[in-house]
Length: 106
Image (cartoon, rainbow, N blue to C red; front, top):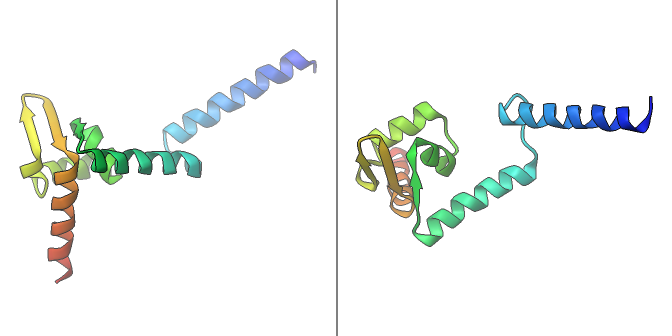
């Protein structure tokens, strides 16, 4: 096997691993998880908005179904929806989520 074949095999393996991580078959490296957490934290601190259910999923690290439940339930005051467009105030959503957790602990 020459060097070109080895490089081809290495690139195929790397692409396969990336796809498996993306599909969550194998856990993502800790750096990626830390980067996601930092992204969610920066969204909270800057008063930014998250868009769509995907934004809620990333902010709270939940599934699509759970994000839908949050949007229709505890996060309703923080969500603005016009047709299919969903905009959520990240700071207010985190505050509402925290308050809902406090109620459940009592």
